[in-house]
Image (tube, rainbow, N blue to C red; front, side, top):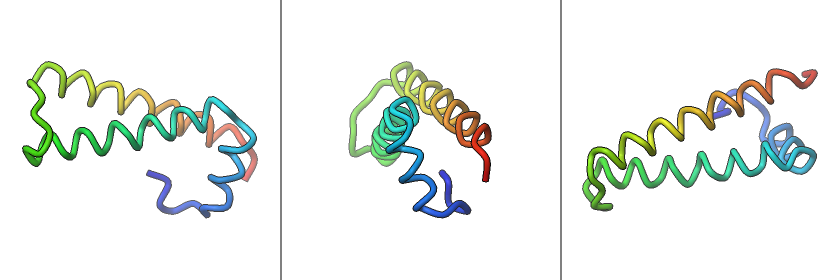
Length: 72
């Protein structure tokens, strides 16, 4: 998600901001589940998959807002 940013910066933000760390981990978890569901590895109904995608997007948007608020 933060491919263009230095990993050291992301790691420092995760250490400094518990909300960022929690959201980052939740986004990664949801990303894996959504990918597995789309591949057919994880059996999930369409409604649940849609909810997971919306939660993943909300987490990503919040992470970006937090990241953009810090000086670079």
